[in-house]
Length: 416
Image 1 (cartoon, rainbow, N blue to C red):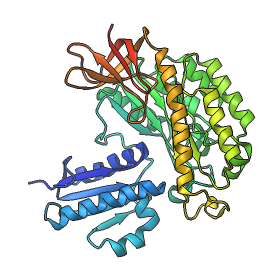
Image 2: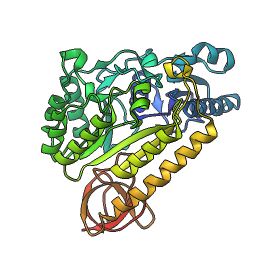
Image 3: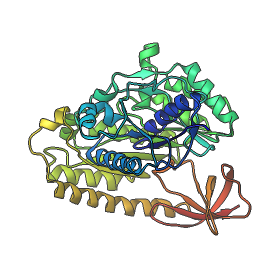
Image 4: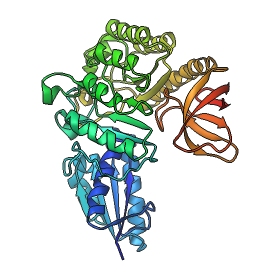
């Protein structure tokens, strides 16, 4: 009887791809994959340690698996990923029940992985095109955990994309810490635009989505490629983090307010109907009430289609850890709520504009009396859904859906 293996993947999609590659290693050794992480011979917890909340989630998950081991339902525990990379010695001292710790550099994270089992539904898949980070934002621990920027060759990415499409994927999501720098290390210049041309030519019936584009590194050529290829989602994931020039300098973001506004205007001018997703950090050390209000005004004025907010997390080993005037948690929470409330109103008005329009929707799941899907403007797990009324729709297929109603983040429609 084969030994069973399960994996609990925490954090971002980059971690999910790592988890798929770890699974590949064990299935090649004869293990049988099992979804139940509380009842398997071996359980792997692939952790995240990006911010405090992620670390707490990772530790809580490990403790649950330890309880299962103590009850005899799990035989072996492996803790992998960022938490192990950052706190390996401390964890080994505290969590004696864990059999093995693996850091992020203890397995191949940027290689092809063309035959890996998917932890996503088969109709979409993440392709990691780079690893590590060349940016040194003062609040971020990722470069210290994952090392320098490292791209995969164009040919390797193209082969993986073709294989995934052959196996039924209808959406390919390109990821990396900052994919706008793709190719800089291998080819001496940025080659994301070239890669997109290659991928767009494989199949016109598959969406290609881009995640994590640094505003200071995004080339106009990439924007034009998105504009000129209908199978590349009109979705620009552009984390801005703040808009006040002093705060941006303190964050080492390398872009000022004027450049950011020009870039957003250029994107919207070049790609009509584009959906811009961004994220901001509130409560960065020294952020004054005036600087925060500037951020709120900017968000209301720019009317971003998709927006996320993070409360600043003070991370040991980063320059910002030692900055003066750290903001109290209660004040971070207040600022977080103000921005989320402001964006809710923006999002409601944006969604109302879709009423009466017909959108292409990728069906994700079937409910009791509806189907749920996504448009090209929505990334899995982080953006909204379209609730669709229809008959005998197939999961993983595209349908034209006429939008009949809207909410703050979701849409309602019926097959056209």
